[in-house]
Each structure stands twice: as C-alpha cells, then as structure tokens.
Length: 486
Image (cartoon, rainbow, N blue to C red; front, top):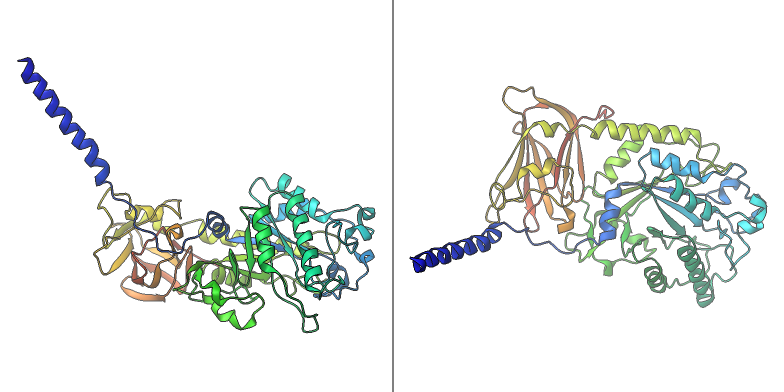
C-alpha cells in the first residue's frame, strides 16, 4: 500500500511539473522588433510632443534677426527679467522642454564665460554680475514642477569672436564654451547645433565629431540636434511642417550639417534608413525668431495647422516664444499659448472610441494573449499594442458603436504605433461606414488625420495595406475638432 501511494504522489508531482513548465511556454511572446530602434532618450523626447525655444539676446534690443557681432554689450539690459515667468508660461502651455539660445550668431553670451568678455559681464544688467543661463536653470528646477527640462543652443557661427575663421583656435574656443554649459548648469536634455552661416562668413570648418564626443562624455542622457543628428534631425524647413510621409528612420551617411540640398530627404526620412533619427519641427510663434515690438503672434488656426503637420506627422513641435526687451514673455504671446493649449485639450481630451466595440482581423496568441484590441484604448501608447497573427495577409482594426447606441460624431482620427519596436506601417486606409476617407502612408509615434468634414457614423475601419514586418497599433482615437473649418 505504501508503494502504491508513493507511485501516486510521484505521478502527481510529474504532472504538476509538466503543467508548471508548459504554462509559461504557452504565453505568447512579443513580435521581433523592426530595426533600427530609438534609444531611451529618443523615446522620451518623442513623447514630449511640444517643446519651446527661447531666442533672447542683443537682437532683442536692436530690433534685428541676425546680429552683426559689433553690438555693444551695454545695450543688453532686461530690467524686468523673470525666468520664473518663462517657466510658468511654459508649464501652463504643456511644455516639457525649454531650449535657450545661450549664444546666437552675434557671439554675445548669456552667461559669464571666462573665455570672452562679449557677454553679460560687460552689460549693465545686474551690474555685470548677472547670468541668464543660471537664472533660467534655477527657474526650471524650482518652477517647472519636475516636469520641465532644459536645453541649450550654442551657435557655431560667431560674427564677433576674432578666432572665427581660424579652425584650430575657434574650435578650441567653441569646445571650451560647450564644456562650461554642460558642466556648470546641471542636467541638459537637448543641445542644438546647426551649420548655418551667412554668405559673408569667413571660411570655417567645424569639428562636429569632436563636439559631439565631448557632449556625450559630459551628458550621457542628452539628445544632440543638428541637420544630421546624431539623435534628432532637422525637418528641413522653418515652417514647422513635416512631410505627409514621415519616417523616423534615415541614412545618416547621406546627411551633412549645413547642406541645403537635403531638405526634402530630411522632411520625409527614409523607409530603408539604417539610423533612428526622428525629426524636430522648429517654428516661431511670431514672424521672427527674436522679439520685435511690431510683430504679433500667429493666429490660433495657424498654430493648430502646424501642430497637425508636426506632432500629427510623427514629429516633435519646437515652438519659439521670444522674451521681450523687458525680459518677459509678452502678454499677447501668453494669451495665444493659453488658447493653443485649451484647443489641444478640447480636441483630444475625449476619445469617442473608448465607448465602442473594437474588432480586429486577428490577434497574436488569441484571446487573453496580451496583444488584443483592448490595448489600443488604454493609456500606454508605447508598450501595449494590438498585434495580428503572423500568417494573415490583410490586417484591419474596426471601431464600432454598440447596438442601440447613438452614432459617433468626429472629424479627427488618431493612430499610434509602439515605436519602441520600430516604425512599421508604410500604407494604410481609413473607412467610415464602408466609405474610404483616408489614403495614408506612414504612422509612427502619432498620426493625426483631419477629415474634410464632421462624420456621423457607426463604424470606422483602419486597414494596414503595407508594413515592415507585422503592423502593430498602440492607440486609436476618434476626436471632434470644433476649431477645424476646412
């Protein structure tokens, strides 16, 4: 009898062991990524969506856009400068990163650099003891609520310094100033470089590779922006518009900083690109980059157009808001920013799809496998997603109003991919109650389709016509934009 019970126990143990082993093996695994992939810093940058540029310096006091380098530092005297106001305005506008022009083309430095006296130390502001950069950093830390980060623009073209035009001397000078900015002021999340210089500029070679290596050494989590990255690329224009097709991937070997002929390539990216290098769309809230008394902010409709064509095309919108000669962001700009934030919240705070039934062509691992359609309606737009089965040829997802409920009323369709696993969708179509309303291309982190009219319907179907690997969708939204008057 004892032997019998021993055998029963052993058989039970073996069966339980099999069960313990087989259950994890039955849990479906995520699909393989499609390379290239974003870095952790690039992924966080993409999720910012809207960031701010602050052009401020001697040009603010000369009513000019491009300083000569011959300006007397004594003109710089923002008697009411309040960087806390800048940060408060940014926070209320939903900004999570602010980039300050520490030095523009005129060569005037907003911090007391020990390598030149063409800076705040030669100005009457704060009796020559001021430091705009430090006050900016302090305000970000104390008034940003922990949700705002800082960045810098340090212009390579310097129309003041006599070392400019002498490759070795100027590159040493530039690197020295770069070290000051990246060692004295704490964590910096983005550094801006460009190759722009006027036709009258001296012949000069910039040691970009040296600069980038120094940046990486001093700030490991920073994103480096330039025409050619290496982390964030220029979109190819200053209107804030990305291409209708917008890839985060590109071939960096085809890029060079300051090359005006690659604007179209920068604007669309490259589906065969071997580098993850997403685009940043820079544009000013006013006509100029620096503050001018005669200028007013863009209309709300213009800002929304830019938003849809930047954030809504898989990019980040970098909106310049220039402080005035008092040292404050102007009330007219503050008013427009508040309108802009209110409009974005009004449009996207309600997702009509959340009250609907979601059906799909297939799903990886079947029901309960973790890759079902319910994932497109949660709050995680990066790491939860719908994935179809491998062996299906047509992939679609449909949002449908439950029987007995009223139809939906919307004019914006939002689609997002989980870009942590790569950018995949090449072509897609959208049908409203069986009628095609969108013939689309790329999606990426976020694609916003503004439709030509408000639709009253019961079903919306998104069909992925072509993709790299399995198409994955992390989020879908149906929204009503009351500001859109096509």
